[in-house]
Length: 264
Image 1: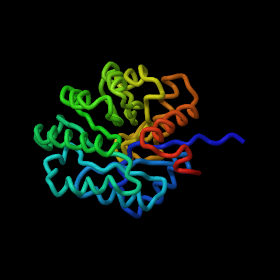
Image 2: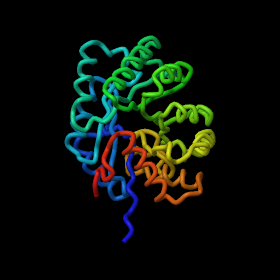
Image 3: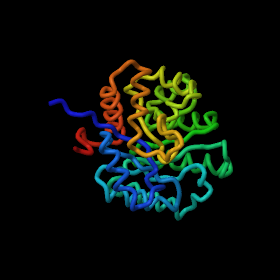
Image 4: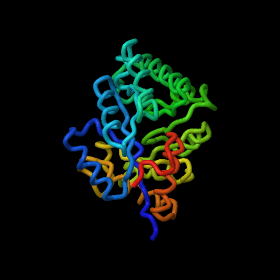
């Protein structure tokens, strides 16, 4: 009997679902073959929640960090909380960190300072990073380049062009592809994804955002990550099972998880 492919959602904000909803969300994911999920923290308020979810559910691991939107809040106390958090069981990365110059919810200088501190923390702890980038590549790339080789991580829900995606790979990082790859008007995302090799890509939902076709207009959730895999299978002329195996292998390798994590 051939095993069913195991999918892993490499980026889902389960902290944005109510505690009562999470068992059903995980159940629907499991029905689609989605056996593992990474939940990133984004701010001071959801940091502990992300860790608690990872501790409660064996199929979930967490990343601890501060999103660029909240980087202005990264004071000495919050730094200590993150430093403690990355030592807890189930925490496999520093994230979600990065730069976002679209909304500018925090000043640019605060964003850069928070990014650099968290990148250095990841290097010191020998952990990968989960990176956010929006209209900020010109500042993000040199921050990464100065720490590579050595830095590991994923450029999540990447939306830059193919040349920059290949630059991410050249730095030793991997690229996260979200449901945007299925959007009708997102030819740029498909063109970017098409230049990448499967061994440099992880699938993700970015739940509850960016619901893929055919779930546009609905709240996104980890079960829908298979639609991202379906689109990549079409782009790369591969079987969906091969996409699942490749993405899951990349995930386990990047985050230092066992070959059978999270089990069946």
